[in-house]
Image 1 (tube, one colour):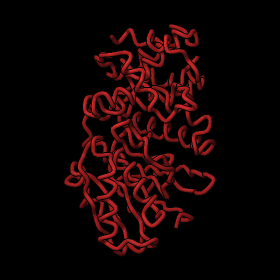
Image 2 (spheres, one colour; image 1 turned 135 degrees about the vertical axis):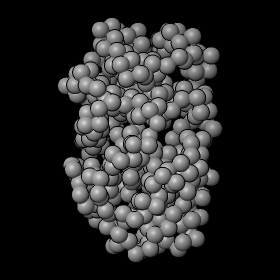
Image 3 (spheres, helix red, strand yellow; image 1 turned 180 degrees about the horizontal axis):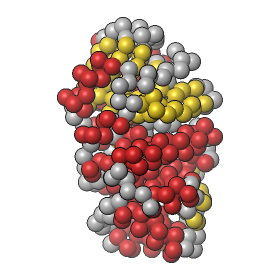
Length: 359
């Protein structure tokens, strides 16, 4: 079924993503959208306990389909586990989904990752589409086909690449999104601009993202940048690795906080500052560039009080990261806005020195 190009009615803008094995649309929807998935034998909508009371009934009325079922997950990063994958698969078996069936993710990054993973292994892989309900998921998790779960050793260490057959962004979901969640998504927009697009970064410096039209523009601009990166490097062998800017540090922050202390985007915002301190320590980034990124994070209320309890423990946790190759940690550092470098073999002393600011 993955050769299908699904596009809901009433779209504002659309991007076509072409990878080695698939082609699909990322569409920005108008308020009165409908989605025809009647070509599939059955549809399983997967959402979580927070989203279901708000949107599940409305969502199901917007689908044109033969047979539709629902599965509701617990909410939270701590539930991005094997147990949740098993629950989704159990529902798929219970409702007798076949290889011509479809899973639909309606939720944030956790739901997107779980559904991508579950659909990728159910009967050796069936199609899925994503309706991201958080700003963070719209600009990050829903695009690119990286699907993973967490375990006691770290974040997203178990997973696969499984591209969706459609990603549909509806701004209506953001009406009920808490401000904290919105700001976490803005951190990922800043990350994308800082790595890839100096003009976009400069626009963000002069833009009020509390304005709905500005935010809509920035969301789709960030998606377009990420889509281009994914098409160039689907399996993260080169340029796509830059999307991990701030994440090497951020993932350790999330792990040490048991995925409860900070939202993903908040941890990434702290991680960006830590990465910039390392880049400054190594003489790669100027103080002026570091200050400009700090200022943009500050402007969007992405400044957090965080203390590294033990630098050695923090450092050792880097080595459970997926970016480790042959025992050497790869980390993304910026030289300038829009100019990144994939660095390997940085000495331990430099890392520990960069972390001193957070002691």
